[in-house]
Length: 188
Image 1 (cartoon, rainbow, N blue to C red):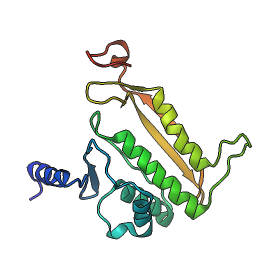
Image 2 (image 1 turned 60 degrees about the vertical axis):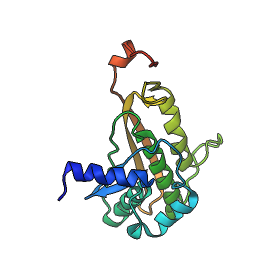
Image 3 (image 1 turned 135 degrees about the vertical axis):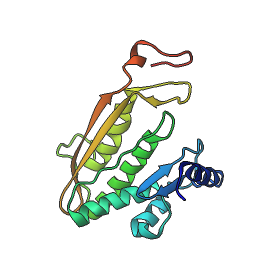
Image 4 (image 1 turned 30 degrees about the vertical axis):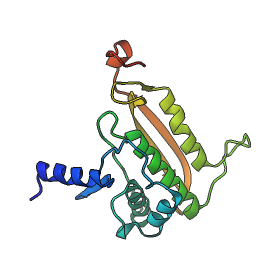
């Protein structure tokens, strides 16, 4: 029987075993471990790139399924990352971007930037843009030292062979109330 108590019980058991990803139907639930786990290494990324279908739930599996679905079905894909403050949304976004840029550069080839200003490949520019955008909108809260003050829509454009050909980040200011007032222990 699938109900809220059963899901929470299962998440608690898995969390105590440092298994932070759990699938519930087509949804991948991630629980922030608040510590570093050795599950984001290049070797783990390679395993998911080689055969994600037979591996346990992981942010890399979501990224891989989306990328491969886009190529196979020739349709846009979307991933929604949602959660409370401190849940790990920014970290999950960063990991998905790392995975997608890595697999796209291997599949479609790395594209050098149009200018010769040393900016590097489009994949590297996408990875470098995210932390810069976050630096302008993050703040310290009671629950999180680096809390985002906005939502964002990250769009990556691909060529037919799977290589990245462009992208954009649109920020949406969500917490205007915290710009003019902060609780004790918080700062903007």
